[in-house]
Image 1 (cartoon, rainbow, N blue to C red):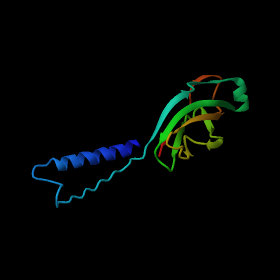
Image 2: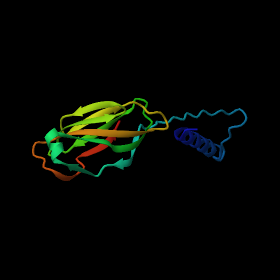
Image 3: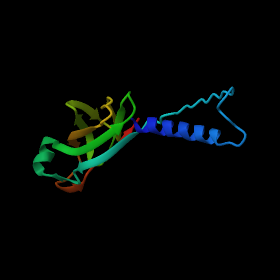
Image 4: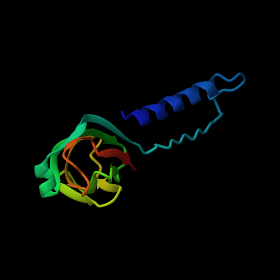
Amino acid sequence: MRESSKKVAIAGMALLLAIGSMPGQSLGGDRQATINVSATIVENVSKTVIHQTAALTITKEHIMKGYIDVPAATILRIRTNNPRGYSLAVQVNEEMAKEVWVTANHNTTVIAGSVGFLYQPYPGPAGEVKEISYRIFLSPDVKPGRYPWPLSIGTAL
C-alpha cells in the first residue's frame, strides 16, 4: 500500500472511531452516517547526491581547445511522485563557462547563460539514478589552474 493511501486509511479509521465513541451517538439500528474522506497528494521531487565532482583542473590544452569534457561529474538519485516528470535546473558560473553542454540519458541540452532547465520524464515509483556529464566551454579569461566546480544543480516540478 502506498504511503499516501496508508495515511488516508488511518485518517478514515480514526474518524470512524471518534464518531463511534461520542456519547449518545450510535451507528447501529436505524441510524445512518455518511463520511466523506478526501486527500490531496502533494507533488514532490527529491534529489540525493551520490557523487559530485568538487573541482575542475584546467590545463593549457583545455584552453587551446576551448572546452573541457567532464564525464559522470554528477550522479544523483531522483524520486518524484509527479507523473508529468520533473526538471533539473543547472546554474552556471559565467566567469568560468560561456556555454555548457549537459548530457543525461543520452540527451544533450545546451546552456548558454547563467541557468538552464532539463525536462526529465517520470522515472516510475522507484525513482532513478541519473549520471550527468558536461562539456564546459571556457570563458576567454580562464587561466590554467584548479577551480571550484562551476555548476550547481537542483530539481523542480
